[in-house]
Image (cartoon, rainbow, N blue to C red; front, side):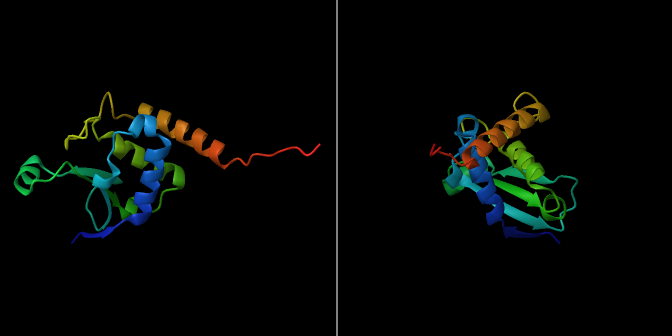
Length: 137
């Protein structure tokens, strides 16, 4: 049986990605984004994104919401860079208008775009952690 637990570490990582890449992912409403870690899932996927179906949103009078699930057996063994790529990939599935639907693989969700955003993320993060030095000469 699959077991799900909240994944606060994944949430923090994703929020950092969204903030760092805000010019690409700024449409994502982080208050409507949730993260879980699954154990025992029978899937080849490392992570998956789930949108709350429209019928449930209408009946329960809810706004669009998304859940990103990371599959513990696969995701947890990855290094930081691969985890970052996986999260970027899943975040790209969220459409610009945050409608509750999901973008398919293709024009807006592909390895080339994931790599581009990953390189931008790394470049921006490395600039953020390089200490400013002042010369006393």
